[in-house]
Every structure is written in structure tokens, then in C-alpha cells.
Length: 227
Image 1 (spheres, one colour):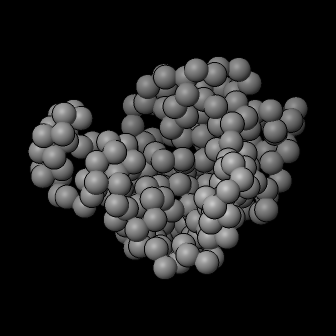
Image 2 (cartoon, rainbow, N blue to C red):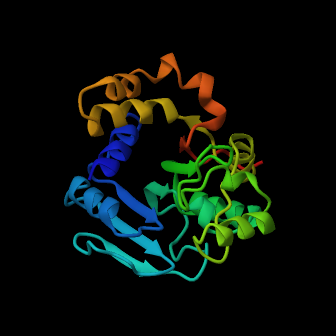
């Protein structure tokens, strides 16, 4: 899976994947967990959790269903944690902070978190595919979703870049922005030859100018000393 390859490529610049203990929070179909199960080797282990079991791939990793943001693992258990487009689904800012604090709790002191979140100020909301949906306050967002025939309510709460950094700081997690590196990898891994691939492979030429409205942000994070 190309998304899993991108995540591995970003993490492997900072920490070894072979032999790692990995946790994926919000595993969904299970493709990322299954990919890492192949990559960690016999000395490693992959755990996955989600509030519902919608997996399409079950092999190679252990899965547990959870009821909320609480993680059923001991302190400092994992070398790597992956939260890939999960934060916006866990609830409001308090729930999002708890999600990050739980990840910090189960990460080893030198462990790494891969965090991908959609940007509140992106022009096209990625889940409902409605322009500017995430810009609206919750009640107006619900009305917009219903008027567009896309459901009953807008059940996502994507943060802005500033809000995301504030949440990480409150959770005592560092923030290494690798958004441009992720865009570059998408170009190298996913795109056919052409102008689109050239643009993705050279995000420094344009992405910083559009940073405030980029679709997603990618962060690599480590536990910071508790204040």
C-alpha cells in the first residue's frame, strides 16, 4: 500500500522499523498495520486498535476494539505510534488532547509518533467532499451536510495548524513538520509521469505559499519532558 510506504519512508529517516513495536490507532481497513507487520520482522510486533472493526486485512498484527481514546497498553510500550487521519474523528479539542496524551503515555521516551491530520482551512473537506465545509461552526456544518444530501451531521473536527501545534505542546509532544517531505514522497510513489508528478516532487517551489490551505499536515513527534 502506497500510503503505508510513505509513512514508513518518513519514519525510517529517524528510527529503525525493523524490530520495532508499532501501534496503529484507528486502523480502519488494516492495510497500514499489515504493511508494518511485514516490515518489523520477527523481532518486532504490531498492535492495532479502533472503535469499530472494519478491517479488510487481518493477518500479521494483533487487533483490539476500544470504546474511546483510552489505549489498553502499559506506559512506554511502543517504539512507533501511527495516527493517520484519526484525530479529527475522536471528538472536540478535549478529546483530541486526550488522544495525544494517551499516545504519549504508551510511547517510549525515544519513540516516534506519525501524525497526519486534515487542515481545517483546506478548500475541499476530504471526508464529505464539500467546499469549505470545515470552515463552518458545527451547527452550520450539520445544515450544510444535510442540504447537500451527504448525511445528518458533520462529525469531524479538523484542527488548524496553530491548533494542532498547541495540542501537541499541551500533550508534551514535539512537532517536526514533514508535510513537504510527504508531498514529495507522494510524487515519487504514487504519481504517473507528467506535470502533476513534477509539482509533487518539488513542493518547495509552491507548497509553502499555499501552506495555510494545504489539505493535510504531517507531523513526526516525540515525547517531550513533562513540565
